[in-house]
Figure 1 (cartoon, rainbow, N blue to C red):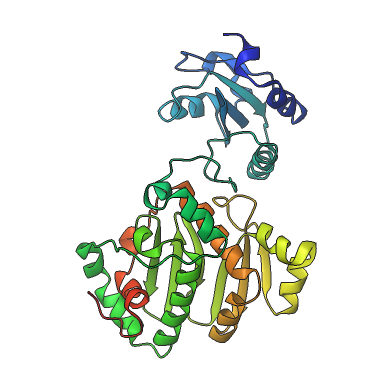
Figure 2 (cartoon, rainbow, N blue to C red):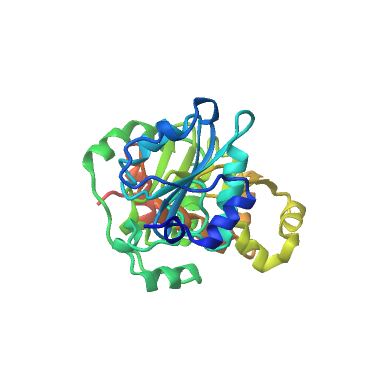
Length: 322
């Protein structure tokens, strides 16, 4: 197979303009140690596997290539960009964003904002048409619950301490309001794709896959992660200024996992947190954020999940377990 047939000319030209070396064929290779001098092994790389690609950073090209073969045995070529000194994270994220925006199909999960691939764990639970209807504002009926009694038993003590705090009912009502509107099919996807962690001093954290998306540690300061691309549709380029005028602290691109299309919003006080969720565009932006994350990977936080909190969401303020 010729190099021209392995690498799309558009991608090859883009990588060249970004400073990457010409792609090197690697089909059948277990190592590329002989292709890269030891003094030139630090930097960014792109693995090429047909129409799919993976962009990453490393301190050692040869070692990282060998590690990748377990998950990407179909790699046909690699493009390297040696960067002997300095930060690698910033250019890695910038280049992922550029490739993503021109439609290059990336296998990355961390750093990606557009969950382009089909056949995810979320697709196994919620049909694609239902996902699109939910993203547009639909609210499917609650259905199903995952049951894991070992997980439930682990959370009994922390749950009891949480329930004894003065704001417990108000915090649960806020959590219910968020989850029912911003987490897709929360009963079906509970534990496997999202979780709610309970804090004994009166706090909670909602994770969508690897990413925390809604949190308060003490019931005083509240954090919400949203997709600014949705806010731009509502307010235009002045979306951040609009939120700041409402007393919201806006912190862009706090994390790697959700990619570039995320922003952290901070408010003080439970009342302000509840009002924030009703600001036009916020629910849709939060919904887009959780959906993107839940399409990328399963939830690794199920051991810290508090099913008792979801009992409240499922059954109302009585909080009775089934």
